[in-house]
Structure formats: C-alpha cells, structure tokens
Length: 276
Image 1 (tube, one colour):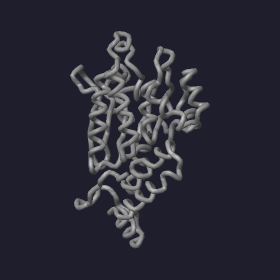
Image 2 (cartoon, helix red, strand yellow):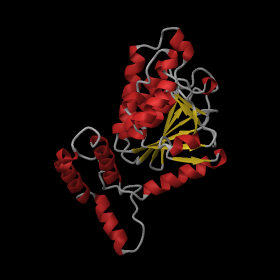
Image 3 (cartoon, rainbow, N blue to C red):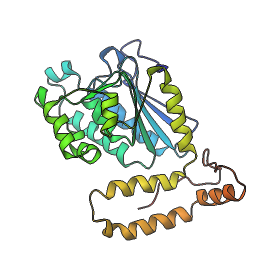
Image 4 (tube, rainbow, N blue to C red):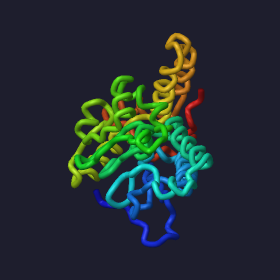
C-alpha cells in the first residue's frame, strides 16, 4: 500500500482528515507506536468522522493507518499510566457509533497489526479490505479489560460462537482466516491494496447514495426489531428513494444504455442524509 504521510514530529495530528473526489480519508497517524489508541486520538477521530458525515459530496469514508500497521490497539503506556479513562471511552464509542450510523459507506483498510481497538474500529465499518499480511484479534481480557466496541457488534457479524472464541481466547488470526469467517470482506496482496481499494470505490460510485444510506440503516435496525415492525420504515425509505434525484438519473441511464453517474452529484441536488 502506498503509505499515507506519517508523523515526523510530536505536533503532527493523531488523525489526518482529507476529502477529495467524493471520498473522505481518515488516517490514524501515530506510526511510531503502530497507531496505538489514546485519548487524543479518540477525540480527534470523533471530529474527523463528524466531518466526513457532514460532507455532502462524500459517498464513502476510508479509514486506514499510517506506517506499518492499521492499529495495534490500546496504547499500553497510557493505559499503565492510568490516563486511559472515561473520556477516552466516551470519545471512542462515539466514533464507532458514528461510523456505524452515518449514511456514508465506511471502508476499513487493514494492514499489519489490526488488534484490539484496531479490530473494533474495523468492525464498526461496513466493509473491511485487508492485505494478506494483516493480523487481526482482540486481546482485551488478557489486559484485564473488555473489548468495548466489538462486544456490541462482533456476534452480529460472525455469529455468537466465533465471537466468543475470538473474545475469550484472544487468538490472533490471519487475514485469510478472518475472511473465511466473514470478519474481513476481501483480501489482497500488500502491493495490490491501492488497486483493490480503487475498485471498491469505483463500484460504490455507481450505487445511489440515498438508497445505500437507507439500506445500511435498515440492515442495522433489523438486528434490533421484528422485521414486521419495520415495514412502515421500509415504505418511507422507498418513497424517499423514489423521490430522490438518483432515481431520475438511474432511469435516464437505463434509457440511454449507460451506467448511472451519482458522483459528483449535480449542483442542484441536495445529497441529504436519508430520512428515518
């Protein structure tokens, strides 16, 4: 992977944000400690995710790590010093919830260590692209704490039995093994990650953002409610989609025998978040 710009001195921000061509890029930027998590990083991550959620032109959010790893988990030095406390967890859980709840499609790009909080962050995203050298795992209870982010999500993703195995035994597994159980979406060679990510983003460019936002929200809701209780919500979502500019573009594209173009949205379009 072509590595994002790494921190060269302590004044570099712990997370870097950039938006271009319809994609918001969020880069964990503590490469000297393999992007280990501390309170400053968690607080900055919240700010970056909020910015991405508010970008009208953004259809996808890419979360990645500078240097040799995606994220090695909790900063053990900060944890041992007692400075990882309630403010960290409030920022951290808010960042994960924002990624999960935003109508944009969030993609985590994993390489090297993706351990503990790194895996929790990835699980909060919608898609996970991993290089074949990535190693994923939790390890929280080995350090006397719980995997706060993944304990709320992991079983929904890979099933209760496998979630218990990863959480209680703290095994570290390869990207291929993670892909086999649905924990990782796709695996590629380290030198092919830019092309693989570009291909995913190109696919998403041809999907209607209003529809994708509703799909993401309704899939999440289906884990908490009787599907029959969501019928009215589904009907409202479908009506919102049918009234969107994207449906008009899709119909024109079908008549003209071409792919629809949803990004960038036309200047007159309100690329609003899906309504509930």
